[in-house]
Length: 423
Image (cartoon, rainbow, N blue to C red; front, top):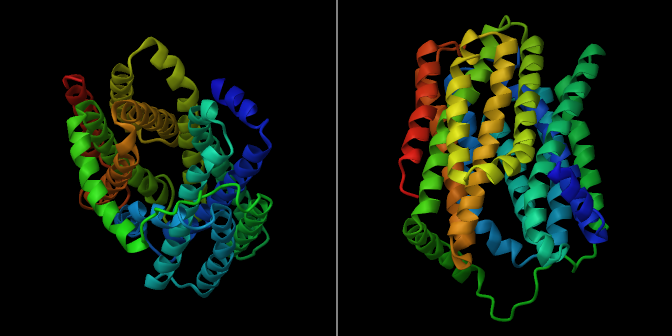
């Protein structure tokens, strides 16, 4: 239970508690928002969730992050991070209410996608600011501990928000109310609460520290592009980290295909496509079970890597994913799919934690930030590529033994290739 123990130690710090409260409240609100978004976009009775539509949705949401993400630091290193945390949440109040109006009016076109993209882009900005602020509330000796614990706690907060949002939606639907609109309005109120929590933090506490030699925004942006090229060159000279990034990119691809298939199975295979409520409730349970696997990885991985090397643990996780993809996943029943979802979640997060550590320990500190930006790009682009591939490979109900075997073989080949790498 090292994660819980470490979090208890960190929470003794007054400033850390306040920053952590903002993270927890913000990511809890994200979970509530995602419930309404998934329900309206994927499980609305008057729309069919095709593989092509899902791929387009993932591309619209994730690809802009990959383009804009490297430049967020330009502003996070100039603006008050306390203000960023507060106003990122306050801005999302207006965005949530706008999306709620669009949902009430039945809008599902480019206007809705732009509104959703704004909400998620602001979220990306907030998460980056949270990470940048962490060294200001934790001493150097506990910074590594904080970097390990807070993402796991944030995931737990998100999953709790998903559960709460699902309950809100069910209650509103039971009262014959506009369930998705109710959930979105609740998310807006929760973002307001998170913004209020941020305002409790002293404005200058989280930085950025004054630097008279700081370059202009234009010069800084140019440095970002040059820095990414330098980061890529440095990564290639650190083959241990490079092989780790290639491996997680491959893993993310096969995990993405499984994710799209799962959405379609709950939408059109396990339940009558007309019974969207049953399909949504089933998918919500699968997301929570997969999330439990993510959280479990935070507890299991430290113990496993004490007995195995990071490389061997990654290989074990990839092999495990290859097996459960077929057995029990290949039985195509809801209970067996939940078992597979938990193990695939554990495998996905376990691989990520391990590759994070490989990169952190293999890359020079001067290049670490740039390499992690490249890491983020690989992580998102691989998932979008998987969604596009799934659009061509999967039937409308997600039931396909050839694709199932392909994903299993993909995990297995990735494990074998990484095992044969010299690092």
